Length: 351
Length: 263
Image (cartoon, rainbow over all chains, first blue to last red):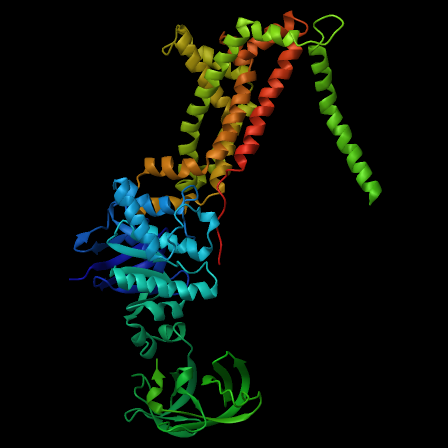
């Protein structure tokens, strides 16, 4: 049986429906990301799980118990907020011990649990410091410790890394994932950053305009996007215009070359135009074994990203993005250079 | 540049003199009770007066009760309006400004009509009842200051998120207000409390018309009967007020510090 079971969850604010009958179920110990652009309803879903918003309809069950109508303080959940939300009047130790104190845990046990938590987040000896004396990353680690100290049934993370610098963001997300795996705590993580979601989740719920676009493991979301929205929102995507040669045989003409694609839309007729999409990394400069389509174009732009060089290539009416590894022995290609690029027709996606 | 500074200093000196000279004159006058020499006789006389001690003590007690009642009324009200009913804020602003617009005299006549000894709620029928009425009047008078102080205090902290953070960890409303909100706005509350105290200590109209032995009526009585003591009392009042202001400044240093960092 699912540990977190959300059924037909709907939330309406006045005339606007921000969450439209969303259902999903997850197992104990999973790390789940709700991913989507701002306004897609992901934060509203998290707030309904936390109990800060009342669902217009639908139900939320945790561990077989219906919590839809419980108050937030009766749900035994832990939550980390984007703005840290540490209590400014309490020191680190008292912040972490707050939930334990409310639960009536004796002082000695509380002390031990606080020390255990401080060790877990790598801030042993910081218990007498006040939040304003800590860096943003340290504050968010304290907030994490505070959330998990009372051993909640589930951990909710509301964009906990968004207020942090890029470097801290990466190191803290790895730390969060390590602690989550260590404790085996079911976690729901809300983010608009696809890289964050892809790197630390067991499964991702991609949301748009109040609906679930796709639910799956990170590699499924990236490699087999179910909708055009998922494909463009998660990772970079190129579009190539093609003409259908034979709909039944799934052959198309790309820039005058015939190619067989894995699938075609049901509505495609012979001679009609279709848009094919592909990821930047499946394109390569020059010929490569296994690539059956070769196209020639002009380099329109070169972006040097360190280990990777991103090229923008004009191919007839198409502008393609292509990633290639940096080679220390040769200079990156120049703008205006003529190039041939190749790709494997099996990597083409039809959305 | 230099001339600019000269004019700035001159303006400052003139402004300061406008306040300080009368104060110095009052102080000097208060020292002249004994003929031909400066002495603190007027102060000794004031402190030896049993009415000074009793009326001051009475006003201090009423002041403290006013502060407690004011905090109990204002803090939860501001908290819930900010958190749940933000659309009520303009209305709150208006209500809390009324005591500055309506003269205390109107307020106290209203009270006497409403709560006189032959009314349904005869507050003025007993000394304790009148004290309660007086405290209620002072809570109202201090409302503009207490409300603004508390409202400013709550503006500096993110009460919405702090409330949610405490709620999800199991805290109920009373625990949230008592353990999180109150301690974080304590400095703001104290500054409101000192202003309330200063108002209560000097208030004359209401205390006098309700016939309570408060410090305000005592000050006025002394002023009409004696020569040197009123000057000494004026200086003592100044010291009390400045002490209160000084306390606000000192406590300001303990205000919760913002901790929004990205590193």
